[in-house]
Amino acid sequence: MKANIIMNPHPMTLGPSDTVATAADRILKHHLRHLPVVDEQGRYLGTFSVYSLLKLTLPKAVLDKHGLDNVSFVTESVEDLAQRLGRRRDEPVKNWLNIHEVARPDTHAMEVMLLMLHGRTTSVPVVNKTNNRLEGIISFWDVLEKLLGENS
Amino acid sequence: MHGSSEAASAVLFGLNPMWVAAILFALTYVVVMTEKINRAIVSLLAAGLMIVLGILNQEAAIRGIDFNTIGLLIGMMLIVAITRQSGVFQFLAIWAAKKVDARPWGILVMISLVTAATSALLDNVTTVLLVAPVTLLITEELRINPYPYLFAMIFSSNIGGTATLIGDPPNIMIGSATGLTFNDFAYNLAPVVFVIMAATLIPIYFIWGRHLRATPEDRQRVMQFNEHEAITDRRLLKQCLLVIGLVIAGFVFARFLGLEAATVAMTGAALLLLLANFGHDAEHQSKHVLDAFNEVEWITIFFFVGLFIVVHGVDGTGLLKLLADKMLALTGGDLSATAMVILWSSAILSAIIDNIPFVATMIPLIKAMAPTFGGPEGLLPLWWALSLGACLGGNGTLIGASANLVVAGFAERAGQPIRFVQYTLMAFPIMLMSIAISMVYLYWRYL
Image 1: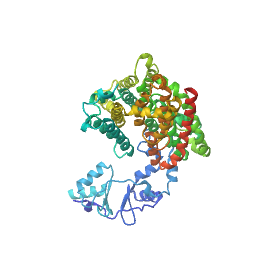
Image 2: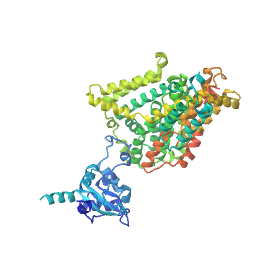
Image 3: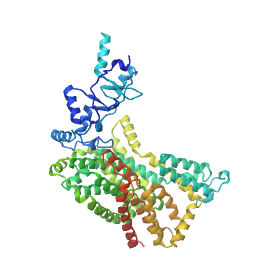
């Protein structure tokens, strides 16, 4: 079985200039963890996820790759974190994308599962190799349904 | 001392060894400058070619490596690698910021002083790696532009490093080559470093400092930081402070104890490794010791090794003696004029090229001047001129010192990039001011 059989071919997507507020709204309303972001031609740009929202509540200084590994001295309250997220609500999502490893439509099922395991993600975008268009998205749930459905 | 006896039996193809050495040497400089090939690869390859082409033999090459510099660098890198895990540097930065009630200009001054003091005792790159993240967190909490803080951090790391034997690689090399001690450096360079640090903050205040504002609420958030929480391991912290104390005492009394700097640093590193690993099982020990060894900047170490061989090869051909004579002819053998030429040329060159190969070249060149100025004692003002020029010159451009590039990396990722031209326009004049102060100091005290 290949990626194009397992995937959901009509995932909910975002545009690069959609705001953080719009994305947060959809994530909360539909209980989604990952929203792929595509440009006007349908090309995959990255994924806005619940982790992007977590990052938006934190100072940039603690996200830097050489940044602080211990932040126990910072005594910010939940309100402080919420305020920071609130100040960034009108930023475009394109500043906060995660670039996940992607599957191709003909990627085999086992490789898709390894991508999920190694990337510690529950969803893998399926992207066309030649034109970089997003063909669909494979969530953990799609995989489970196929696996358990075929066994039964 | 070197000369023909150290050279291999025959130079390949019968070429003039001085020319071969000069070309290899110049190529090394140029390739290192272009940054297309890793500098450790360049210097090791050039060193290999020096031997293969018969400029010097392997025995002479190994004699050319200054193991005192290498040992001191590795020892201090190991001590820092372990100490940084204790969180003491974050503690210092937060403590300093709170001492001034989280007022923006006060924080800039305090962070600069912490950076300068830390750089005087540690490697500059390590210092900024430790201080920059906390500084960025503080400016973010205060919602103010981090640019002036990072600019001041670059300057204070290079200025602070000038003050001591162990603060900056040029000083380590000069100290090692001349036998000048930790105390000699502190006694002769620290006074002018204080003046230069204070003078550097003046333009920074007028350009940025007086415009910095933060709201009381934002300042309150920084005041609520609990710096004691930054200390992650109290036992380790005590061990580190003990060993650093012993190492500094070792440097101060080095002459009295008859010890070289590398012995002090490496023994200190070994002692700290022992204390930090004592009582742990073998597997844990292997992991921790390997982690510490991995933090040593091997690229820098091997760059030094290759470079020492290349410079030793060039020195053996008499080229550097020739250049020294040319320089003396230019200055008429006058000590003041020679010191000024060394001070200003090292400053301007160090702003553009890596100061490590420059200083490695200048050391034998200055040593060759000893007869003109009445022996090694007479060279003292020239060593201070070289140190001040090479260390402070690094402030002139963004590529002048490796710490500058590390800070620029932080700025870039924080979304406040430090641009090369914009930086140079501000930094070069401030650097020239520091050299002018050094010039007055050298005249007043030595010339």
